[in-house]
Length: 393
Image 1 (cartoon, rainbow, N blue to C red):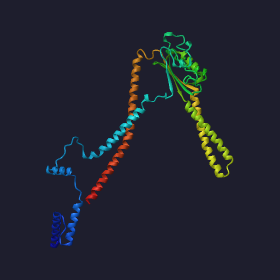
Image 2: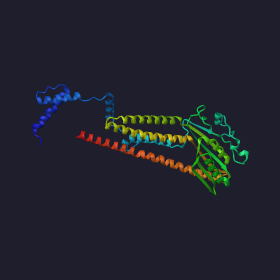
Image 3: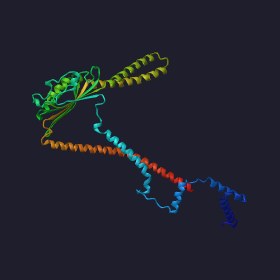
Image 4: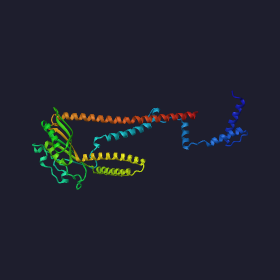
């Protein structure tokens, strides 16, 4: 129960504070009441003042009863904190998905490179490689043996050494040829044997072969490695086995890589010789052990560079020849519809698989990003609650 004297004191102090706020000075006779007046004046002086525009808007809203602002888009209150993180996450995922889809496009990965030269056969039999070397395609090396001249497609020989870089015979060129041979269905097996014989005749080897014979027709694929120095003669003999439907030749200059690896190998070997001399004149065991460790590192570097040099020499000394063998009429007549339908189904399946792969990658990125965004939102909400609780306390 409140004592009457306490109630009177409280009322006296409140009247003193109101008087000080009205007059702007603390003049009460009681020291305690005067101290309260000074405190009230100090608090009023230090209180922040709102901007005039905000004060006018707040006054107008108070007079209107604080009406609610119209909402153009209705969203649950609980979803508002998710808007900014979700927008950022979806933007990042969309950009990454576009990048993945672009990088997975088969047409964007061209193996020709900046230093590649591609030559396609034309109907007139002209060849840019012939212009570079002054060579012409022998008539005996084109078309199908014993066939009709009207069905013959000229075969374009590869340039001789230095053809891809005129007046520079020391260039290192990685050559490749893709050709399609067409033969009657009953001669497909014979032509396949001829491909193997021609490859062995010129010192090459068959890296991979596949021959299919059945009711749907006969076909075959061969991946050959033929010495680059004997490539022209081998291509002429391969072209003489059957009708050449198409032929593509390409070359990529790898001289820079070859010279770089060779120079690094020479430098590593020179360093090894220097280390061996230092090891012979080492004065302490610690110095000798340090030199041995460095020798081990240099030996590993030399082995790696020698392997790179062997690989480059293999790629330039042996040309890659891809031969596709098809039977005549395999894509015409009644079989064309079935083949086209099968191709369409295959393309549709590839498209679905590619789309599914992109979606899986997007989900793999979206799930952790969403988890991070959710954890950030939850942490911010907990912090706001604690601040609100501390302010109320």
